[in-house]
Image 1 (cartoon, one colour):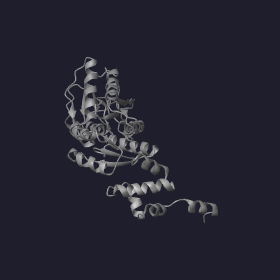
Image 2 (tube, rainbow, N blue to C red):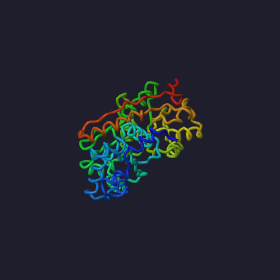
Image 3 (cartoon, rainbow, N blue to C red):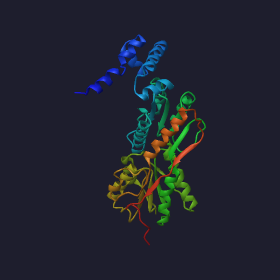
Image 4 (tube, one colour):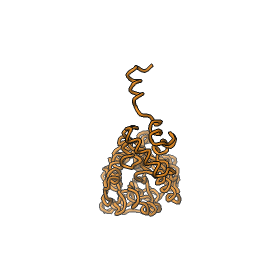
Length: 340
């Protein structure tokens, strides 16, 4: 049983029914206003918000949202959330949003760029204060730009954009760490298992692989393209012609896993015959056979940077600059120096 003082405090605290009585509406109408239901007359919404202010009702986050005309909710559009990078970014954004009193409404495209316009409209209808696009493709970016003028919008991509706020882990720096590590080990022919070219991250990693080889005076053979999945890495590995290559840089750890599997079936030893480097540092990467050398992305830092930039955008900050987070090379047993 609660103490008398606690019960007295509860009795003196205004309830949703007090707000409803003061505003002359039902408690369900008050609830709809608090949840930013779109089908509420503006005159009714004003009566409810005035009653809330007069009675000092609601948690501070709701009161702040009403005063500022904000929902304290951010919309997130995620392509292929089943992949480690997009899913980790979304979780980090959600955690950072909670730290700042915001919630996240997430919408998955599942690889379908055709639905992005409808998805943005759905989130706008929910009354989100800003929009975050995770793992964007070139084919989906035009639809995002069309709404950027009406809603603060951030895209998680490396390139700066005149219309959009952008933040990212430095994909090019990460790829250069991977390729530089292989060059330092004496590898002179380094293949690349690339991600889908419509993805900004895949393009950045491929470009940096090519630049690192050219800077070292080495040839850059045509990359082999996968679809981020371990199955695609396995299929590539089954048919891969090394032609003197002693190393492979895979654009993510899942494809690297499939590649390791295929090479093992072919009797090609890693790292004795071929060194393999991945990208992401998935939790299981250290348990691959052999444990995978890879590039670690700090998704926690990325999530916090996303929210920091979005809050700046909500307060009127202008797009056009970019923020990048430095990745880290994690060296394990899948890479070694060239013998002989």
